[in-house]
Length: 212
Ligand code: B12
Image (cartoon, rainbow, N blue to C red; front, top):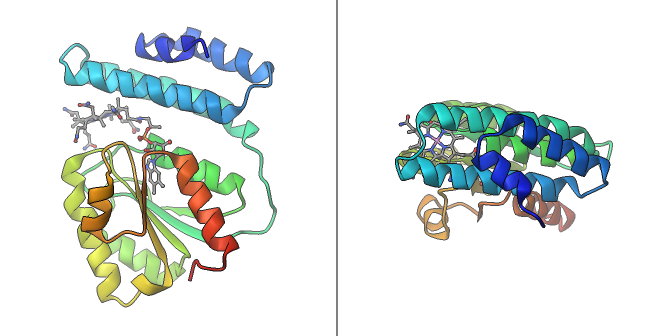
């Protein structure tokens, strides 16, 4: 892989990134591989930001470029089934407005035939529990890109347990800052920093009849 696309994202070159995505789609490349290279570019942008070399405006620009690339790729992530394989409630938790990764996860789930209820960003634990109570999903996915979001993830998991809902669903956590240790702390069933792994887990669990 040339990693030209990753470099274009890092350099915040929108036109070049779009042109590379378009030409690689036209060449028949796996859209997931293209998406992954975009994600790697975003990680590098984050490193520059952390090092004080990029500013918030640069993060915003990188997000716009990523969104454009994802929109170009989305039609190529074809639906594998017509009837819902299972139901998923998704949210970026309170305090956090990062949603690019969550949206990718939602797109990939839909492409596999899952019905996805995306509650958006900055979602309070009580709202999540209210929606889960109404929708009774097979899976709940919480996304986090900020470490300060961890307490609201834990609170939501505890509230699901206290409401008696925890045993009837699988709880997933994901996003760049999540770890296996956080999974234990929150009491989730699955953790990942890769949406494809998350989708594979949902497909496998539903296939084994183990989502409930
Ligand atoms: C783009 C970006 C922004 C954009 C977000 C735009 C948007 N609509 O999302 C903007 C400019 C708004 C932003 C703001 C801020 N940001 Co910011 N941002 C980023 C950046 C560069 C990229 C994140 C991203 O979208 N990556 C691409 C996606 C595709 O990757 P991903 O989210 O990891 O998702 C993948 C998987 O994790 C998975 N996934 C994601 N969620 C879920 C959920 C489930 C259930 C599953 C199964 C899978 C899954 O699927 C995806 C595909 O595989 C990161 C750097 C980084 N290393 O990530 C910093 C970063 C996350 N931001 C950071 C910070 C500090 C901030 C600000 C506080 C900055 C400020 N001073 O204001 C604010 C916070 C605002 C808020 N309250 O949320 C820090 C967080 C540090 C920390 N440890 O807490 C980071 C790590 C940068 C850094 N290194 O310092 N940011």
